[in-house]
Length: 80
Image 1 (cartoon, rainbow, N blue to C red):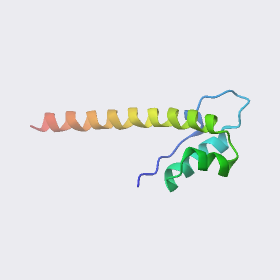
Image 2 (cartoon, one colour; image 1 turned 135 degrees about the horizontal axis):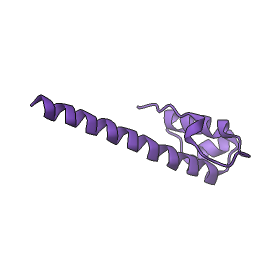
Image 3 (spheres, rainbow, N blue to C red; image 1 turned 135 degrees about the vertical axis):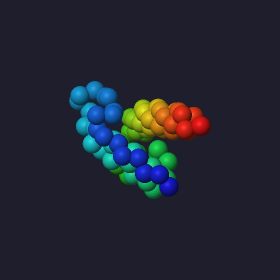
Image 4 (cartoon, rainbow, N blue to C red; image 1 turned 120 degrees about the vertical axis):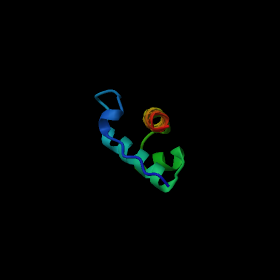
């Protein structure tokens, strides 16, 4: 199982929202394969707030994975 490191700068919410519990909840959710509902209840965060954070983080992770894959493909093509 992959474990994604999430920094609090990757979640851009209102400055009035404490981001640390959201970041911790997302990391815990990914690590222990919890649903958004389970993690929201465990960390006492609303499901919608956690869902927004999760969607934003997964979009960021997908971009990073895609860029890494493209770089590896380019290296392979140059070696041929």
